[in-house]
Image (cartoon, rainbow, N blue to C red; front, side):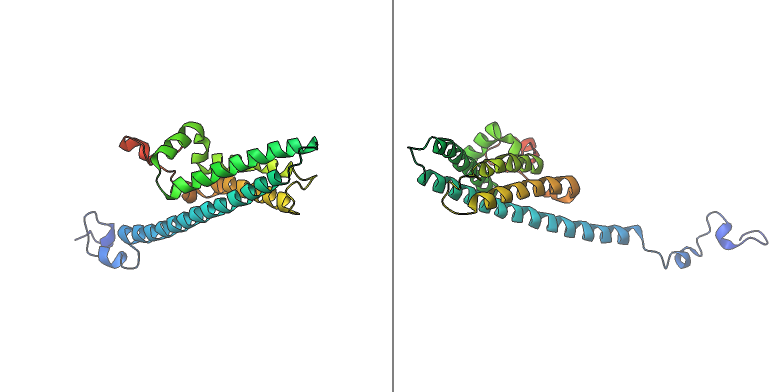
Length: 201
């Protein structure tokens, strides 16, 4: 019993009105469950975004591979300027295959290929590195802009701008969307040791 003139809630150890006072406020368990629901939903959206980026990269690889092959088909050995176009076209095919194979091992575990990629192309195992790769390679396509060496009007510009935009978008997601960066799990097939499975290069 509190002293005369003091309310019940002011007395230490008095719990008579605790239930009444806390009736309208959410408990910690309720609040945390709501937060977990929101975070799981954001993680699901991040995983969907990463999957869509992977399908986009398949399309980019197809565009650049097509551009490189068509440019090589239209190669004219009699023209000295065509040799530089053929050189760029060969590189475009190689880099398109690299991007395609990386995305393939992201979806399907291929141990030997994954080990080779980690040794030689480790920068692609994160959103930032892959974005910088896409931006850098985009300028190969734009190197054919003057001659239309592919024989398909506008394909060089479309491919170059698509790679450039996708690279900038990867970097933008890495900088602004932490859930997507956390959801991006690089391929781990063929790695030994449990600690290697969560390594992002």
